[in-house]
Image 1 (tube, helix red, strand yellow):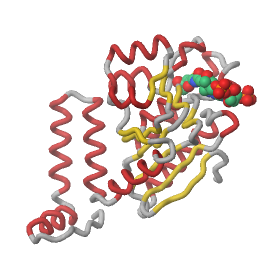
Image 2 (cartoon, rainbow, N blue to C red; image 1 turned 180 degrees about the vertical axis):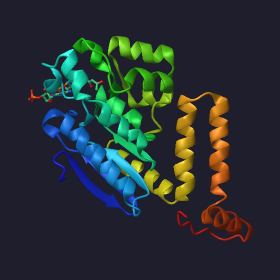
Image 3 (cartoon, rainbow, N blue to C red; image 1 turned 135 degrees about the horizontal axis):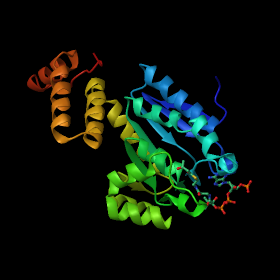
Image 4 (cartoon, rainbow, N blue to C red; image 1 turned 135 degrees about the vertical axis):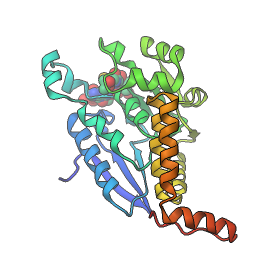
Length: 257
Ligand code: CAA
């Protein structure tokens, strides 16, 4: 399958996916989402890729789900199309995904950003869930992920008013990791991805999984899972290499095994 709406590239061990539907501010239609998830899963299988950057344009990361595509749907047609099933597959990606966002980050665009592991935003980003203004509500995780990320009061305010946040506000709320000038945000995201790509891959994978457990599971269950992952890493060559390198005062050479 060739991607119509996703541009692919890489730098070193970082795979780069760029949303490319500029005439509608990267509105996320079903075809784009299927292509995106297919490419993410392809990168997941590619041993040469250790981290992924997901980005859009300076003007828009994404202005939401495609309103034109949804306008005439009925409850039953939406149910049967299972439009969001494809979104759930993003959670199956074990490699870290770094969102590099700028401009409009709205509705499904904000939900897509929140599905990523880390976020670098440009100082021009406007982030929010304006679905209420369309007579609907978020359907790709917005009420859940936003509330977990920034707490009940602020999430309630954004979701009930449809207001947007600046990148600085989003940083203060803990919704994103970093703000950079618009001409720098993509490079900053790439730098962050490259630093993570240089880490031992098995540790990266299990840390991502364990942190995600903290979001969804009671503490005792999460602690148990973390301990299991910790023990599992002692079956890896990289654990021997990392600890021996420390003791021998040299730089470790990790191989993801
Ligand atoms: N879906 C489809 N088309 C969209 C779109 C969307 N979400 N957002 C923008 N577009 C299109 C516009 O229709 C317009 O197309 P035409 O040139 O063919 O008319 C083009 O993109 C440019 O948009 P505007 O002319 O509106 O640009 P603007 O600069 O005046 O405004 C904006 C930009 C504030 C982002 C405005 O476009 C807007 O409010 N967009 C909708 C945002 C929104 O409500 N998103 C939530 C969608 S629902 C959702 O996401 C559900 C979910 O949970 C998954």
